Length: 204
Image (cartoon, rainbow, N blue to C red; front, side, top):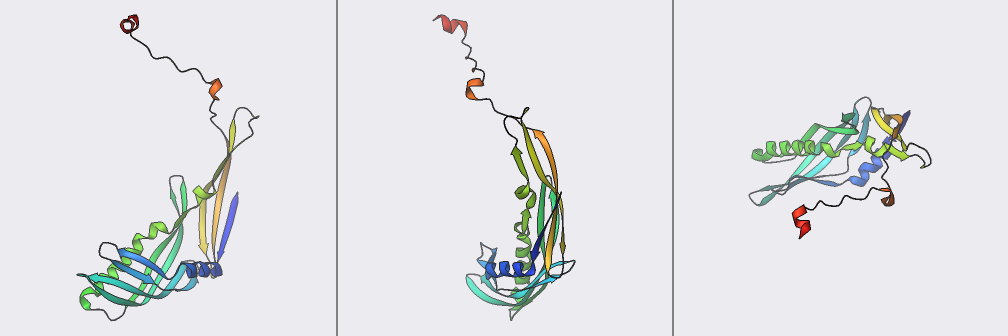
């Protein structure tokens, strides 16, 4: 069985608009963060979803905050289906295509650029949806059916494609009927064995 879900560009624009401006901590200990303003959204057929905008960086040096302007940042979110064990996830890999800072002292320019790139890379695990866990289901069949069985529908595989105006996720399902374990009612369970008492102790 195949299920196809489509996400339009308009839906992505609305989602990004609801999430931004967004503050991303890149070094909590040193109180360094970047605030991404609302970006432009473009679909790149066969590649991914491109976000482009500007940002502000809070950069702490020896207790003094240096305000930094990111004149342009551009990230391509490359979608793929990742399989790990029984898990199947739709992952969006962030690829930094462009990063242009404003007037920044030379001794921190490279450090800030590197910190932003590393901070974005560290968030990649959060840009994933385990659709197998969400969509797979196990349903018990009626109790009057013997032996006890359950119906399983499992999201076993998937593929993703990006067009000019939409993202399409195809999920392939497997179905099966399996035996299920049923716990006996308390009255039907065997009585618990009494603890053994050594003969010498029992004679006292």
